[in-house]
Image 1: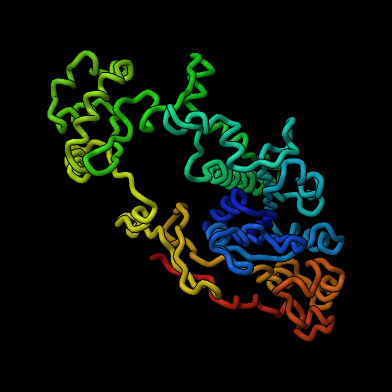
Image 2: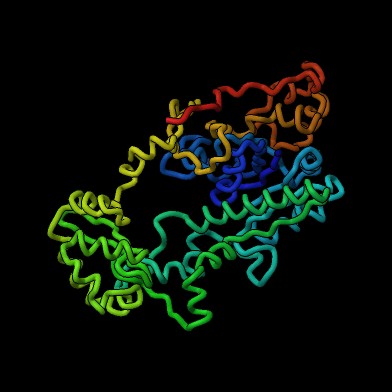
Length: 430
C-alpha cells in the first residue's frame, strides 16, 4: 500500500505512522516554502531540521520536498497519485477542495484513489474554515470542564488525546476506504475531524445527558462518575489507583481493608448503593489507605485480584518490566542523534515484527520517489528542478548535483535502484 501524505505536526503524522508500522509506504510531502513539516522545529529538543518531536511521529516514512502550488510540482503530485492507493492529509477543512486533493479532483488520475482528510472541524459545517488544535478542541467539546479537581480550574489531559485519537480514526477510515476501493474499483473521500472525534469520545456521559439529563462534572481524586470506589487514594507515602468495576472486587476489597461487614451493609451492597452513598463510603476508606505504604496496599490488593496500580512517573512507565517485555521502546540510529530510543506504536498484526526505522531527513527520498514511483527520467527530473517543482533548488536539501546542473549523467530511471539512506533506518526493539 502506498500513501501520499500531505501532513504536518501531530494528528495527521500520528495516523500515518501506524500505517507505516503496518508496512505501508508513506511518502511524506513537505512544503519547501516553509522548510518542510513544522514538527521538525518543535522545541525543546530540536537542532537544525531535526527534532525528537518529529522523530516520534514520522518513523518509517519517506520524504519528498514538493511545491504543490507550482504547475511543475503539481504535475509530479499527479504522477504520484496515479501510482498510489491513497492521498492522506491533515489540512484545514476547506483546504483539500481549494488545492484540489479531494476524490472528485483526483479520480480522473486514479479512479481507485482514497482521499482521507483529517482536519480540525471537517469538510462541512460552519467551522469548516477554522484551524483546529488539540487544546482548542479539549476546551470546546467539554473535556476540560470534566477534568481536574472540583474546586480547581478546568484542565486539559496531560497528553494530546484528541490529536492521537483522531489519528487513529483517520487510519481506520483510510483502511476501510482502501478495502472498499479494492473490492469495488472505486475510491472515495474520508472526512475525519478532531471535532467529531472529541465529541464521540464524550461517550456514555453524553448519552446519560441526552437521555436522562445528567450533568457531567469534575470528580474528587479523579473518581469514576458512577462506580464507587474507583479512584485515586492517598497512601502513607504515595498515590495509588483502586477500582471495583465488578461486585466481586468490592467484596474482596472489604476483606483486604479488614471490614468484611461492609459487603453486606445496605448502604454499600450494590453499585447503586455505593454511588448514592459515595461520601460516607469514601470517608471510611480514605483514612484506612493512609495507614500503610503504597507497596503494601498494592501487594495485598493484587494478591486477591482487586484492580489497582501505582501512579507512576513517565520515567517509571518507560522502565516498567512489562514495557521491556512488550518491546515498547525501539532503538534506531540517527545521523544527528546517534543511537536513539523512542516509544513504539501499539499496532501488532500477525507474527512479523514492526519495522523500527528512523524518520526521514527532509527530501531524503527525492531520487527514489522521482525515479521509482513517478518513473521520471533523469532529464525530466532536471527539468522539474529548474522549474521549481521542489522549491528553490539551492535551498532544498537532498537533490543530487546532476539534477541541479541540468546535466544528468546517470542511466535511465528503469535501471536506477532506490538510493540507500545516509544512515540505515532500520532498528531493533529494546
